[in-house]
Image (cartoon, rainbow, N blue to C red; front, side):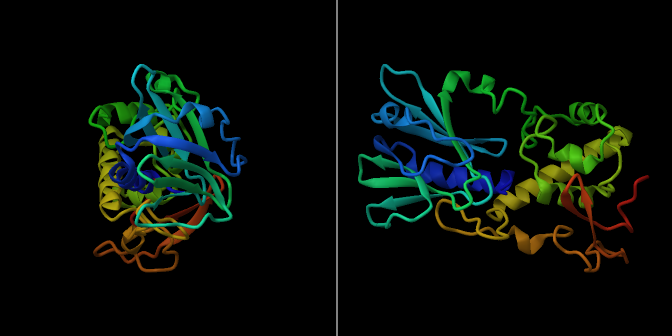
Length: 284
């Protein structure tokens, strides 16, 4: 499932490709994905212009405006296999089996959402009410925003005795971090993934937050990670999978200098977790 870096990469590509385009027609080709695509979009969106595309947690937010009308935001989640593509104009595209949703623009291009496994989501909300939408009202702070301080992050960790790996995946604690980047950040911060979040010291919490930010920024710069079929809206695959230090490297030597450990795999709360027991100790 795409995590923060992949979704951020898609948002940046979409913003370059579709911002300032005006919706002419909406096609709901197959409405059954995770939830039913709202049929009201067919009458609601024509005439709206895409202002910009941004991210919140693991969601894509397509902000739309129209004169004398309230601003709207199209909310999308890629699920396990969802992809956006821009077609038409100089890039004609035949309709594919798993196309679910399409916007025709007045310039002759289209924005297509394709999702073979149908775990994705498309909804909408008035932009002014987005913060109170059911998908976001309980969502934690963005890890890359300066408003999330080490002190605040530490306070959030203190509220749970669950393994730190599980806590990092809790979107109410911190937004956008997923399985891959939780393992990578814990590796860099020298924290055992099974360590209780409540036992982490203020200093270690600050170190972990710095590691999360370092990993996420590096992954965004690399276009995210492509493990199966992920690619951005411009068709480019991610490269960060070539820089993994722990994730999906079971049985390989620890890449940390002077560490003689070996990457191991365990399962925490049903999720595969990779770490080096040599330097990621529960007491560190």
